[in-house]
Amino acid sequence: MTPLSETEVRRSFVNCSRGEAKTLTLPRDFDELDWSRQVVLGWRDPKAPLRGYLVAQVDDEAVGIAVRAAESSMSGRTAAMCLLCQTAQPGDAVSLFTARRTGDAGRNGNTVGTYICADLRCSTRVRTEIPPWLRDRDPAEVVAERSLELRERVRGFLDSVRRP
Image 1: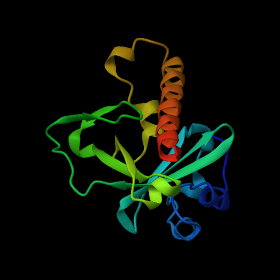
Image 2: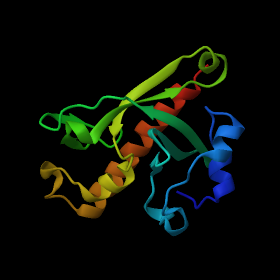
Image 3: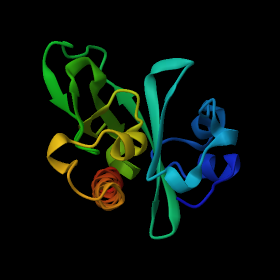
């Protein structure tokens, strides 16, 4: 990802008001982010535990969406998979997130949702949590492939939020 300023991140949000974007809490480590390792910047809002944010680059433009986690979580004794980074985890480490759609659809209360890592740190997982069946391949190649796939799935989710 190309490095973004605080202002650029706030301006990137497409499914919330400017006022909401202006007051959202940025990640604690925002000033120390290694942007070259980010496929998608995701974080939970420490002031509003059910709220989270995803920012990705789509066609050289930053696009951000506000998401909301489900109030209940799955059991940690069951397995679940993030549908963005496709990392298998305990059920309580994955959450259903919904995003308000843009435009009239969003104003009418329409949302889209998907299961995502509860901490929204998919960019880290595609680099560090390599599935066993891929461990015999070149690690750099696996990370590049998983990063590309994550980018495509995030873009699909962002497109569904922006679809009229």
